[in-house]
Image (cartoon, rainbow, N blue to C red; front, side):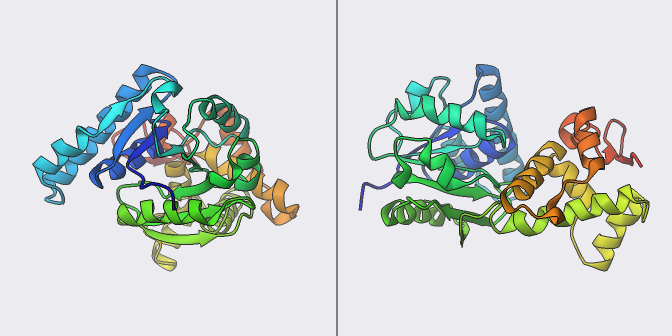
Length: 293
């Protein structure tokens, strides 16, 4: 087996990337955090600092451990900065062309035995791996949001992913204290193959006037014991991400049951993407969220 993973790179300092960097640093890994601008990296570092501070306040983390973990996360504004990483995890936006461009830049700089992983929640690992110089060392490591809180990680092997890469990726996730589930490389894998059509159906239920935003979310929270209503969850995930996953399912499986709801398309076209834009199925601009329909 190739060498132990000690240094990881994370590409994308947003919600997912900063969360991955957070848990990796706490687990003792050296972490290099990359994004398209220094400002985004600094914002990601501030998020990690704030989230760890909350863990200290709740008694879930010692202050000394927080300081040590923060010392293990370094800004890496250039792809060249990732040259010595043992594992690089791409956590950019859920867009295949964006990811391919990142991999094209990245692989020119990586050492030969480095593993390359994508945090994609729906896109084919086989196809992404084939666009790199190392399909055998390419794998899907799909973390759930928010990463420091959610226990599950989906590992997805592409058709070319070798056994050593899978073993090293699983050992990495085990060291993070996560529970691993293995998914075959089908559109949206396991979690989103089940979750996103449910959210899409909730949006259809709203679109067809079966219930209001509040009625639908209340019904699923209290009637199905979900911790969060499906429309509230869609806002949390990001409606653009929800749409992109539904499009991957619809295109990849050619089944009309995965057709994205026209209302979801309309909200995305309006730029109402959920919490991150302050408006989605709820309006977040006031003191408390108010349903928009």
